[in-house]
Image (cartoon, rainbow, N blue to C red; front, top):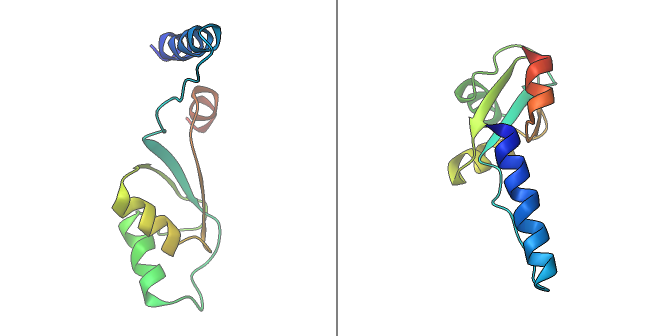
Length: 95
């Protein structure tokens, strides 16, 4: 299924290029968040966001749906977390 979606994105991009247009793919709707720092000395707000994201220990990770609220939470917890868009290879390595 992932290959089909990936190939469809490439196909749509090529069709748009042939017509002289641009194809903008949809933004990813899922991110992987991992805790990389301890919460000693951080504000209670950052600590609460870490709890809401279920990141209670260092090197814990979780998948988060992207919406306005989660983007705001990632901005608050930015000093203590790293996040990015997962692909099939990374997910297989995590499991």
